[in-house]
Image (tube, rainbow, N blue to C red):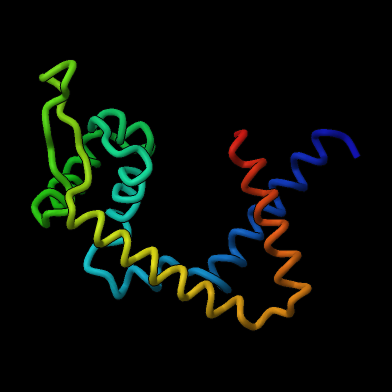
Length: 147
């Protein structure tokens, strides 16, 4: 099989695996229906968890949306107390966005809920299936970190 064929097949497999995981394990759309934070805003919270703080421009680039489209999301999360703005230490003209204690607490509860839902779904697997899935998921994560 050529490299192009491998890339195409891998892309197809990842696409289908994502759909199956979304339907069978964690459906973020369903979870977000019961949340106080809209699904469109969750990505901001998770990105700030990963990066600790970002400028509006950097956040917009990371999310691949325009800054004007990001502004109302940030404003709502600031208003609801999940985020805070502060001046940059090196350049006070730059405003940095970061999570508040309320934002961290909300994400912790959300992650606990998702992990519990996932654990519940995985309980139906046999020991052999669970070993295969665990080993495969670790290997996939290792490879994806190189992208």
